[in-house]
Amino acid sequence: MNNRNHHKNRRSIRLRDYDYSSPGEYFVTICTHKRECLFGDVVDGEMVLNEIGEIDHNEWLKTETIRDNVELGAFIIMPNHMHAIFGIVESVGAYRDTPLPRDANSNPSFKSPSKTVGAIVRGYKSAVTTKINTLKNSAGQKIWQRNYYEHIIRNEKSFRRIQNYIINNPAKWGDDMNHPDNLNKG
Image 1 (cartoon, rainbow, N blue to C red):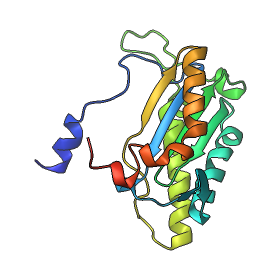
Image 2 (image 1 turned 30 degrees about the vertical axis):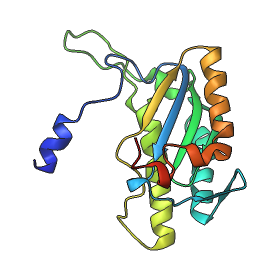
Image 3 (image 1 turned 180 degrees about the horizontal axis):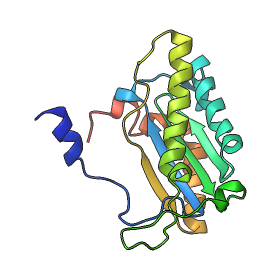
């Protein structure tokens, strides 16, 4: 099968007809290309970031500054992936005064492609990739897997469970499905 057709036939893991720019809380997991451990190591149940991991960490922190519709929650950079909770909030400013595009029936439809979960993840991945490749002098080197996992957080119980999962992730690294020793199991 050629690569072009493979990507066309790939099943989306996103909810159909869901507006991913909607205010709410989201949980994402983003893995490195081939789940390579790039960002540091877990030592005695604590994540110790290396220089590349610090870039990853700092770029995630910038997300809230760069995007007026994002509020960061708990997050962790692991050796080969990151987990994060963030909120999309109503943003204010000139963007809200932009004329609405029209749908196929000439009805105004609000689409915010630059303010979606996907745009937030793409922007972050792009910034991290650029900085790491500049540091390593390795232009074009893949850092991230093509896709990411997301979950819409719908209630407080789910929020607390995910937040605890993030906080405790380094302590449970040996059992993590992304741990190199566990990747081929299952």
